[in-house]
Image (cartoon, rainbow, N blue to C red; front, side, top):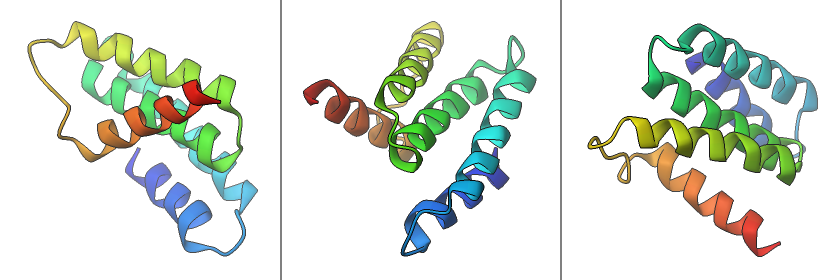
Length: 104
């Protein structure tokens, strides 16, 4: 997950133009993290789903797919209550981007 996050940040935020190959590599890393965390570590699964949504939204501009992954993350986070993630950076970004998608 960490490797995918670094690749995504470099591909989208560090470069002048988006590096699509790096975005797809990050998507593969996030998907792998989701599959490895499935039914083992719900928090990692939720974070990875959120990051996957960000890759689709910011990297590939695919709002529908991004929204699906954001909603998956929120669904998983609901199972982790009473733990709260509102102050986590990834959670704040996810909520910002999902609100942008809903406005579209």
